[in-house]
Image (cartoon, rainbow, N blue to C red; front, side, top):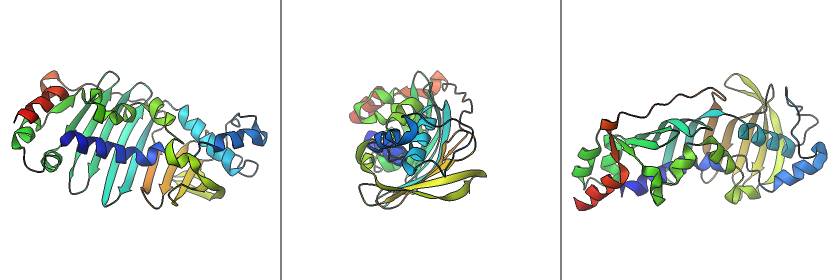
Length: 263
């Protein structure tokens, strides 16, 4: 069913982001090691004095204080590789695309009031297994509005709200990360970084690249093993302007589902 495929693609696309910093239980450890639970002041990240846990926590806190960010990368899930190119802010605005090679893509747009999505023809055809040309024709070139109100599509709300998205950092299995160690200095998209490495519950390695100049924002996250991939964080704090699509190009999600079931 289309709703399940859209929800699945969104969930996979956010999988790497949601547990990315692998913090969780390590927050307390970082707070107990000389920082009093407070992040060191910017500018600059003193990678020699700070522990790996403290660097990781500062990156998490920095992103939690950001007003907007663009997430670009790919996440692997079994035989699927979902590509994400999505800008999101704390006002509930978002704009970008999620795609699944061989399946198609859909645009995601949030104006702070409602979330809209527009699957391309390839995605619609694949999601309906080619058995519902009426649904494909109904949606071709149109936006779906109100999808976030469907229980299967709750991920859309999180995807379009940076505050909600950053709350999930360190949630789930990755909150049990172990063997957190310092990595090395490097660069990500021209910015100086320092990496922190850890093991997640599935045995994969998570590498977090943190900016060492200015605020310690996470600039890249890499995961190996199950659910692995890479995500870059760009355009941090860059204002995002989104306009809702014209009303005559929007179809209500509940109406769409009714018509599909009746077809």
